[in-house]
Length: 140
Image (cartoon, rainbow, N blue to C red):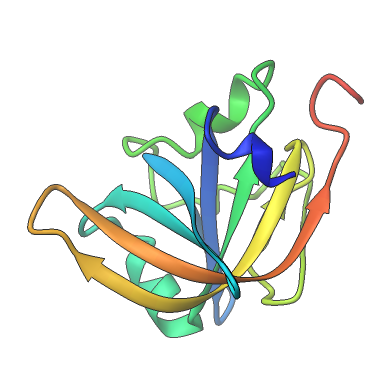
């Protein structure tokens, strides 16, 4: 499943105290094998960051290339007044961060570090707690 990480589109999501948010991640990469950790790059100051900070967790949904809805729904420009997970099938894994059922796979992580890169993006490192493979958009 982790072989899917080098290419593709990803949605990073988090939830805390009844609020959920998601954003298309700029990049996702395996950064350590023992323990297994991933690094995720997102736009610095994005409104998902307080949810990640407070929950100390996030998920990564690996999007199917046939999925055109998710990248639009979780784009940076998407309105933040609405819950982006309304009307989309989702579930939670160990950390309780939402994952998209329409994705190919999901990775559930506990935050171990947030790095300010002094650039337009921040790097969030997470220890993998759980993972799941779905059938994706094409398999439904």
